[in-house]
Length: 281
Ligand code: ZN
Image 1 (cartoon, rainbow, N blue to C red):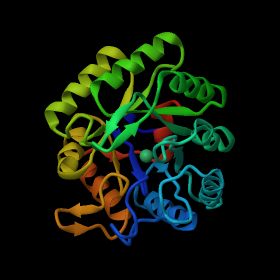
Image 2 (spheres, rainbow, N blue to C red):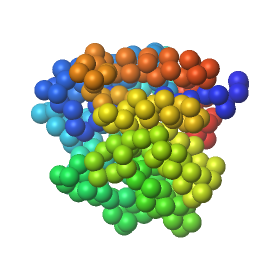
Image 3 (tube, helix red, strand yellow):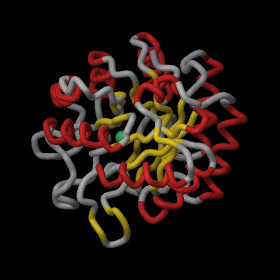
């Protein structure tokens, strides 16, 4: 295997909980659309697919059958070895069981672990209370699903450090720095440096990835690559390819990320290289 130090993992988040067909007709919503989009993103260089599903109205929901259908469709594409990462946060005011069941039953290689509660976009509470996070960490260890530690501000990194000490999370961790969401840390290079330094102090040996939503998206992409990190792209975080221009698909984001990585003389990790970097079995 070639030198992994120069490999950057591209995660694609095709759908998320928020964008609707009214925001962009190009967001995949149905399981068959999502699976097809993931397959095409894998062909463009994505190594991880972070998956959300929607209800029949296209709204945020954690419906097990939708996850099952999507995951089965992706797994049915025999040449596609993309790493499946299921959300545990497909909306707000969800039942804990509904957040847990998809990863617990479908056993993807990864699932998101949102490491704290926040006031989401000045509108609602994105709740991840301590008892829930303890349960989530234990269950992920039980079924050997690697948590993707999503952190929206530096305090959540310290939460992760606490959970390592308590045995709820097992080092080395993989962090996703989610930046530019109102209620969390703003998407700037200065803040990204601070997030990375904090992570290295609190959870040494961790790997990391980052994304920015909105105006800071490209700054975080370039800064993360320059700082040796991995990146996440896709319509969960941005429906615009650039200011005023709706993206045609998720594939255009993946293709751009790969181009930027290669211009930096790094390389996009294949799924198997990403497995080695992340310690997935
Ligand atoms: Zn997500």
